[in-house]
Image (tube, one colour):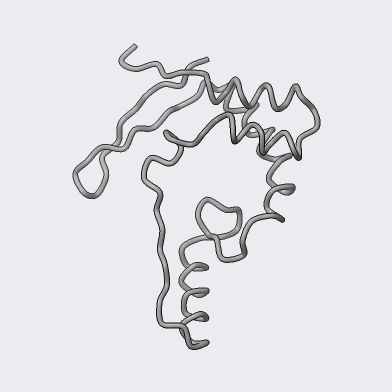
Length: 121
């Protein structure tokens, strides 16, 4: 099903657009996440903290402090604006297919990526 488009205010006065899936879709997405997270977590950088399990901004600050204390003078904080709106779905599916051998799961993820948006009814 398409996700429901909802806008929430940001601190800077602008609006952030969110997509809210149906309860059934959210349940299925969570099941997929629980299986895939341990597989992909092992591949991610130890210095990456955004949207990672058991990692938060305080962990990122501690890591930055360790880096500064070891002699480095700069820390890079990166936020990719509208990343999920612009990520190449075919490339993402290609990458997932290297690890996920069950084509039904890859196909389901691809369907979620193309599910569409329900805006104002």
